[in-house]
Structure formats: C-alpha cells, structure tokens
Image 1 (cartoon, rainbow, N blue to C red):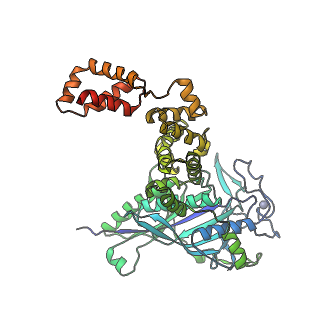
Image 2: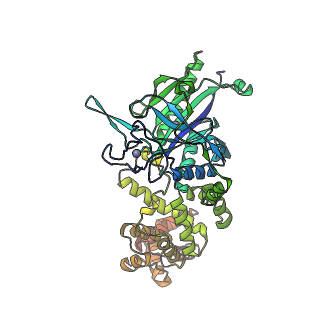
Image 3: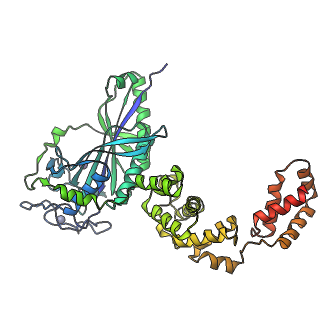
Length: 499
Ligand code: ZN
Ligand code: MN
C-alpha cells in the first residue's frame, strides 16, 4: 500500500492598511492609477539624511486587527531594518518588525475539512512598509515608487491548515475580518492583499514524532484561486517526488497561471541573509494599556459573533448565518430589511440568499465577471450596495407576498423588475397588473377549462398518478400569466379531481 502524506500548510498575508498617508512620510497612500512617481517625497524615495515618522493611524489599525485576531498586543515593540537589494526598494532596506512584533499568538476560526470549527493560529502580525513596483516595457525596466512606503500589515499563521480548501477558507475569513474592521480593501486584483504559502508533506509516523517534512514556499499569489490551485499542484508534485523515493528540495516557487504549475524561483534565503537589526532612526513603540483599551472599545461586531447572534436572535441556520455575515454590507442590509419587515427574519434571509443573490450573480455575469476565476474572489452578495433598491424595498415586497397581493413566483419577477428599474414593488405590481387573482369564481372558470381540455391527464390522475396535479397547477398558472393564488388553485383542482 502506498504511503500516505499529510500536508502541513502555513500562510503569510501582506495587507495594505487603509490610511490617508504612507507609513513613514506624509505622501498620500491612495496611489491607485496615479501617474508614476507622483506620490513620492525624499523620505519614501530613500534620500540620504531623511528621517521616518511613524504613522499613528497605521499603528492603531494594526492593533485593532491584532485584537480582532485574538492576539496579544505588545506594549513594547521594535521596528527593524530588513536589508536586501532590489530595484523597487530605494533605501536598500525595508523597515519592518522582527523579534518584537506588535501582535502575536492569536487565532481565527474557519470551518475545517471535517465540517467542524477549526482554529488557525496567528503566530504574529507586524507592521512594515510596502515596496515600489518595477515595470518592464520594450526591453527597458521602469520603476514607480508611488507604492513605496505604503503601510503594510504582515499576518503570519501557524502551520495549521491541512488542505488547499482550508487555506482558501482561511483567506476568505481573514479578508472578511479585515474588511469589517475597515483596515484593508481586500482587493487582491489591485494588490491590496497578497499571499504566500509554505507547505510540506509528512507521513503519519513523522507527525506522531512531531517531525515535519521539507518546507517549500510559494510566493506572489495574487488571487484566492491561485492560492488554492498552487497548493493542490504542490501537494501532487511533492507526493510524486516522495513516492518515487526522491527528496523534496527546500526552495521558493512561483505560480505560473498560464501553465498552471509552480515554477522554481530561487533556493531559500535564511533570515541571516537579511541582517536584521533594530531601526536606529525610530524609537521603540510603547503603547499604554489605556490606549490599547480605548482601541479595543472601537472594535465593531466581528463576523463570528454576528453569525452567532443571527442564529440566536433571528433563528437562522448556522449555514445561512455564515452566508449573510461573510460580507459586512450584506449583514447590514439583512438587518435593515428585518427591521423594516417586522415578520419572521428567516423569510428575509430566504429572499436574500435565494432570489436576490441570483439576481446579483446575473448582474456580475452581465458585467463579464461571471467566470469561475472571478467567482472565486467574490463573496456572495458582496456588491449588494450597488443595487438601486434598499432593504426597505425588499421588506415592502415580502409584505405584498404575505398579504397575498402577489404570489411568491410573481414576487421574484417583481424583484427582478425592481432591481432593473429601481422602482418600488407596489408601483410595478400596479403598472403591470400583476396582482394575484384569488377570486374563486374567476379561477374556477380557468380550472374547469383546463380540466375539460385535458381529459387524458384527468384520467391518469384518477388512475392514481397524483403527480399530474403539479402539471395542472402549471397550466392554470400559464393561463393566468402566473397571477393565480396557488392555494386557491390547488384547492379548486383537488375538489374537482378528488370529488
Ligand atoms: Zn513620501
Ligand atoms: Mn513582509
């Protein structure tokens, strides 16, 4: 029997913090689509003799994130120089944190591969600065330093993930938390969140002895899909190497999206190569317990807590609660609709996760974002705020359905029309004459006509094929352009067929 190998996966995420200015100077951090080298100054250009000043807002956002990730916040932390030479690093070093990071020993919860909640340890989260960008055009290399010095939060997990799917779920959860805190946009396509994976395989015997296999890093993963695919690829590649009796080399790989395989980038550098030392131009960062407490008081309700409240207070299933809290905008929208509706919250949840999300998927497809690749980046309903209707409009529609003015299926069509035109439900029902027909004598005429026209089906029903009832329902709905009250129709049909 072939040996089985178990993946051990850790992740490093670099997340740009949403601050007005850069980490150590006053340049605007909002550089997206700005002409190259227009958001720069002597400090972030690395000119001799300049001095960095710590961005207090970036420190606050890091502490908020650390608290949200259940980390211990260091009252005393130190910035360090990470020395290396690269064209996009004007100073020849990056100011980062090394031995004494701001946050350590935290965790977040994902759904594990066994379906149970699973804690992923956060080893550390520290503050550093982003690098510039190299562009390669017509055989020339150009440099844009607008990004150099933008505050960057590096979040490092323990090697707690066991599959590509768990790694993916970790990223989705982390992004939701960062967005809920308002510290990061989660825009991977704009490079606001970037991932690196480290992965090794080991046998059950190695695991029992607390041993690990050889670790391979996969760098520069700029989509969730690249993370998932590259991990799956590396697990297969390393398994094949080990099964053939070979040894896995400790290397850094990149992901080639076109060839759909990992490619060797370089053999591993060690931390000694970076010659870290405490940053002499910055004092250690000392935070008072009172200040940390004040920051803690500003934390919003986090996704897990909100999901728990949705199940407890609104009677939602854990699954629906998870879906509705995966994006803060969706959770807010849902709660406002529940308020406006006043009926069972579960009803609102069904309308949002069913018809409304279906409409949002259709809109995304129409924008050309419908392929699988984009789907992987998007949380369901994430663009709910772009709708021309609000939560109260959905609530008003559900009330019309409850009151029997329109039936549920017509209600879905009305919702589509509401989203297409931005008009309220009542106006659409009125203008298009969609109001449900519950009038018994009117419907009885339609039912009788349908039965008279289909004697064969009537005979089948009476011979015991009761599923024909659904077919008759469909015929009556067609005759009434979907407006018939289904309860009345069902009763009229049974009276005639069973009577
Ligand atoms: Zn600057
Ligand atoms: Mn880093």
